Length: 573
Image (cartoon, rainbow, N blue to C red; front, side, top):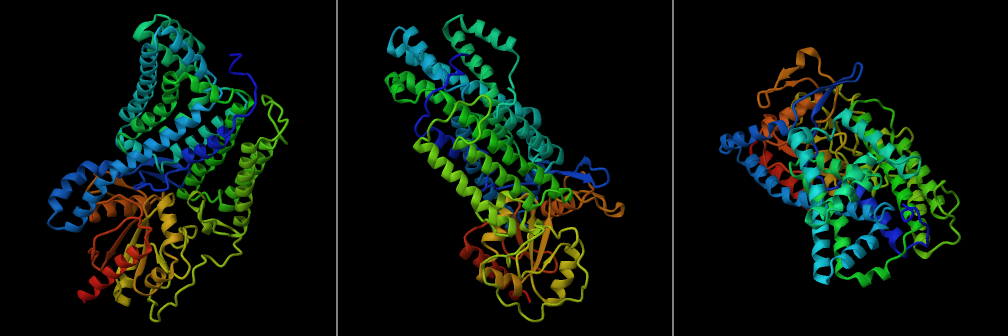
């Protein structure tokens, strides 16, 4: 314990990497291939109930694909493509877990244990080969324990439940509170530990020696380091879980535990390299405090998810930015030693790595300030509430020049259904959006244009990237304005349907009770997909004219997709 609380000089470069890697580890996956909704709510009293989840339909869709291959060859092909993207997603989960594990290794509960553990194996092994063998077994034991935890999460919840967590109100609010508690713990307010009796029991078993003793040594490390690793484990584990992949939690823990176990094995093979490592000390606690600030900042993302889906209208974009700016200023002042917590050592001088990290933190904080007046902040826009939630926007919208709208784009419909409900949904300047399928069909008939269905979501990261980086580009924008009826169907909206519009899904067999569930059921039933964003070009009969497409950030390819839809529509006239 004395070793864990010791103070020393800052390690060159370690704090810098801890900050950058932890930022990556806790950033929601920007390239998430599928982000789906699963629950409904009564807006009266915020009562959470179940609605059909996309995962509920997976088994049914497998059978439906075989039956509909002839009738819907396009969508069947789309399913095949999506299936091939799963390994890439699991690699992303593994990398996120690995980065989280490396950040956990730099925590004061684990890093000081490295020289002690390596010394134990090299001296007690009797020979170099025996010491290496024991250290490898120790590392494999750590990996086994964490992967077993990941498998338990996957088995207990199952893919259907995990898939439904992404936009579940209870889960997002619970995770918000969890990150706040963990963040405050990292700041030093208290420590979250497992019962000491459990650690003592495991430590006793580690004295038995042999293979069993080494395994219990690894188990003891897992337990006693929980106060440091627990928040990171929870973050990477639950981030993997919400993807809906059955193997996600296990793969995440494989990456996490590999990064955690690798240093113990490598330094046992090359013990002389320990001399090049910085001594444990106050810099370890600084890593912990910086991670605490980051956890508190990212907790707001989960609260914002609930606010958007349930129309609370409390967490606007400028609210999140204001809190993030305040956190950034506090973090910067902490790094330069102007503020400190009770368990911190004095910062007598600024090291070079610490100086550069402080510069990065202050620069990022100042970068966010113009966002309070409507600056798009494209680099972090996917993590923020939509710009449409901002009360004061001095900007003129996106920087792209608006293409001139064609004449004759006026329909006989004077009042858009659900327009007031989705006024906070991200908008693309110059594009007229519709939010009800039947109205869009009527407009398409009047204007003689195809419909571009955008299956989107309040909490869809890739949807925001498409809306900010692809749609405003002039060659895309002109087509959206002049060649299509733009229909946005929000599949994770929790607005309760009127009693007369509720129905039982013919595909999932579940009761459809909210607006998002209605559009999700339509996407699954008609187009055999549950992805968002998911773009389908259809005629006024709802028939897909070209193969549907998900997020595609290549502008030229997306333009070709739009052109193919226009050509297919005109060829049928």
